[in-house]
Image (cartoon, rainbow, N blue to C red; front, side, top):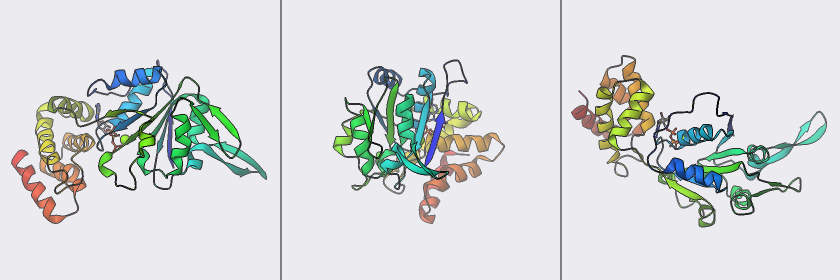
Length: 270
Ligand SMILES: Nc1ncnc2c1ncn2[C@@H]1O[C@H](COP(=O)(O)OP(=O)(O)OP(=O)(O)O)[C@@H](O)[C@H]1O
Ligand SMILES: [Mg+2]
């Protein structure tokens, strides 16, 4: 299980750069103030994780990130008894730790987690705000500084993996999408160091390729891939090569689709 713990005091390291899409920063702050859990949905690479790290740093809260996967169980989150030097000791999982210490616990790709995870999340995400640790008999009460944030990509969902309404309806939800052209150009330029004039055609190409989502490709080009592409170009790689490696290859394994995407790219990128 990938768990990342970061603590950023207000006076500490720089706040990760984040360009808002709408009212999400205000919504996050209000949800935090009112102790409401938050669910973020949107396509891959559109800024969900960056948003959470930005807000955690802005609010001066420690952030525990758990990347959920299909083997992730409730016990992985709450904790388990482990053998240590002949003794059996209880070791908190990342969620229990975060509830004890306060701060933000961020469950990335929550739909991937096993069904039993919902059982531990439900009492924590309604007005009880408790985390019962079944195996120790302890019940943790979330402090006022604790906030649960989760995210998922609705595009990857299938019937088996969809979040249950009873889980969804325990969260305030924010929908993310790719930013408008001008803002996305500014972000990619700022993140990669490539000038905006050279980034603009890449964003235009990405917008064309995104229109093909659901037809030939499963997901559109993410802002993340645009940043990669601009980084390659900024290091001197010719645009065509960078576009192929960062914007086209990651989208498809089908030779025909790749040829079609390359043709679209040649019309946009000189
Ligand atoms: N609004 C934004 N402000 C600043 N940078 C952004 C923004 N949106 C996207 N980015 C850039 O895109 C990259 C990818 O964003 P991020 O990792 O947050 O995506 P994500 O939505 O969490 O994707 P995934 O669902 O795959 O985890 C960031 O590292 C950052 O460079
Ligand atoms: Mg993410």
